[in-house]
Amino acid sequence: MNIRFRVYNDGVGFRYEFPEQKHLTYFTVVEEWTEFAMTGDHTAWWIVGDYDTQEYDYTESKLSQIRLLNQGAINHNASQTPFSRTGVQTSLMMKTDSGLYINLHEAALVDYSCMHLNLNDSNFVFQSHLTPDATGDKAHLQAPCHTPWRTIMVSDDARNILASRLILNLNDPCAYEDTSWIKPVKYIGVWWEMISGKSSWAYTDELPSIQLDKVDYTKLKTNGKHAANNQNVRKYIDFAAQHGFDQVLVEGWNVGWEDWFGHKKDYVFDFVTPYPDFDLKALNEYAHSKGVKLMMHHETSSSVRNYERHMHKAYQLMNDYGYNAVKSGYVGDIVPRGEHHYGQWLVNHYLYAVTEAAKYKIMVNAHEAVRPTGLCRTYPNLIGNESARGTEFESFGGNKPFHTTVLPFTRLQGGPMDYTPGIFETQIWNVNPDNGSYARSTLAKQLALYLTMYSPLQMAADLPENYSKYLDAFQFIKDVPVDWQKSIYLEAEPGRYITVARKDKHSNDWYIGCTANENGHTSKLKLNFLDKTRNMKPPSMPMPKTHTIKTILKRTLLPKEK
Image (tube, rainbow, N blue to C red):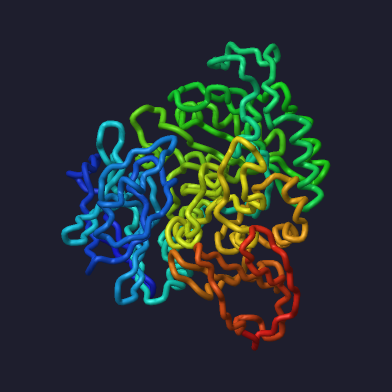
């Protein structure tokens, strides 16, 4: 075995390599015992170590407090398998008492199990902990082969962690000769009304269970709440066309949603058959006539074997009707039963779905998949991931206010996140009176997330009617780019605030956004990063105590100003 190191100004990566050799060809990894020894009881921003979900709120604590706080940091999820009272997930962000920032993660996770960290809180040493398969093994390998890179970043300036390219640089260059079909996307969707409970993914409530090859939906009565119907989808298409959005995501368009969740069901969806009230051909033609594309949705219900059986037919359907992007989902326990979301079997599946999609020139936005490790450099049609606690949880009780000041230091280290920002109606009961949740945010903060949460795939997640109430603020979502030529992190402190300036890839326009915790943040910025011959003309949007923006100020800013 060889250990290969790559050293950069901002950190180091190392991996284990197994050359071709006579007495080691096929072998099983029972455990990996990489250790990361901390020098003290650092402050950490962490989520519970789990084989199946990263959809936890972050906890800020000393390393010595992880064991005590572990149980309280576990909230309910559709599939979860915590493994230790001191287990945490990567990317793990820490800060020493002397002011050093430390980040631990991995890069280029391919054909191996996802790495977690298990803390020995008597000496503050982390040990790698791999996700097991259904038999308890951690990986099955064939030499020559290698592990993913284990990464360590260290800096005395938190901004350097955010600006680091270490994870991406440890991945292989692009595997595709032609990438002209991979484009940034700004989209809306038939989604938030189901997430809030206002509407339904399912077409009918008449049957307790569904067998797809035996049910005739045309003979069933609709429940009256099915959102993916012709009239409603046309409304979204019209809104997207009016306001310049590229695509409209439609969830719940395909048969099978009546008993899709919680049963570990194998044949749950076929990914090609629409409900009776969703005219697949007519709606795509209508969207194209308006200069808009529909975005496909493939919820697998974690029945991965079923998805792979139907994948090529599903991708071909997308080509036939003009789709070029798919949002996939892996909600619930994995089928094959006993496998985990972050084990080697699923890691290979996620990449298989991406590389097969590339054969059809399809971009993939995978939700509930393993957290990214920079593979978007090699496979750029992996245009986005969720793989963390996103905006949808604002409708399930809410996220901590500091959540978006932590994610760029942790989850986004491995790649862009489809966080689905843009919720203008923060009191969810105004969307669905039966939902008492509220988004722990403000309208101004929702706008800032389009800058602080980088992604070339950005959603305006709220209902069209809520945007129509605040068209002045909505104009910012319409105007803000999703593709950048330069990014400068102006201020950063994990758990407190992040301020970033980004320059549009296709113009000389600059945009600045700040996200902060519940205490807010006042920025004092130097604008010397501006081009000397260019001025800055952004709307200045102060964050009032209410969720709406009462004042929009417009003025020209010069590079010499503060």
